View 1 (cartoon, rainbow, N blue to C red):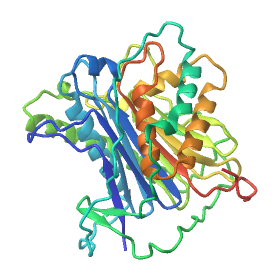
View 2 (cartoon, rainbow, N blue to C red):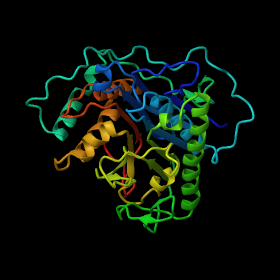
View 3 (tube, one colour):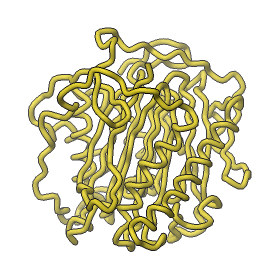
View 4 (cartoon, one colour):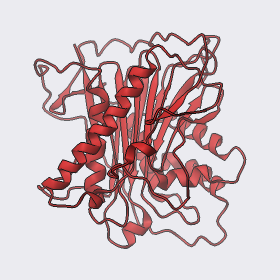
Length: 403
């Protein structure tokens, strides 16, 4: 039986603007926990403006798709672009891999898998930056208050699954423990990162790479971005807007939760990172940086020139155990930090906090609160983060790794 779920932001259309300032979501997919959160930036909040970031997490069978987008702030309707892009891109990534279901699953539940309480936020106005520690120190230090956002411990929720965005169903084998996926490590490590023009660029050589299905997955990523771009044109027409009004970046990640193979694509700023079992952090694709002031967006007619893609297979030694997909509101705080090891410290700490949370709901609420409240100098933009972390882990010698 094909099962799956769709969680995160929903598309905005002619029915009205329902984009909330805060969003969180969580789910389990195979041996992975996936948590997403998006918080309006302090500048947008001060101006009584809307959140322009959006994310969606979508699963079908063994495949998990994550899409993140950031609307361009100079365009007042860019959130309509971001919400459309994450819905379309996540669906397009999965469409070639999963056959359409012939019927809706039976036995719907009466109530959805919703948290018993929502995180409460007080005054989120940023305090004075005078005397603040450096960027990396502030990010990691703020994580010390991760669990304070949910005051009462929450009981673990049933392992719900969602089918075709209609309702929630319990899996038939709910009482059975989740099986650890059997992975097939690559024996011949090679690496490749290509853009849509077919030109190659290097990524770290210790990322293992299996070329068997690379071309197929790379083509899926390219077509997903292309079809989303074409759909964005129609979306602009339906809203009586110019295509320029729907300017946004786009980041997509496709993960096979059984094999560990991951494919990624990115247009514009933001970051897609991977954390290995030995604590190393890798940027899976690097978007072009002709100028730090240039902004590349999916609505641009020549967006394919700025599309970067990559496929990474599960490695036999030091495999990836967590992935992070984020918009520039967080990425710039991390990637442009001058402090040594700040990025690795942050990634490891977030991973540990998620695993230490009593429930996925508390993990999502705490991550959302952290995104909405941490303070570093010059950081005022919306912040969005989706983390995919492996719950059962083995190292390169296939021995259990302590959490």
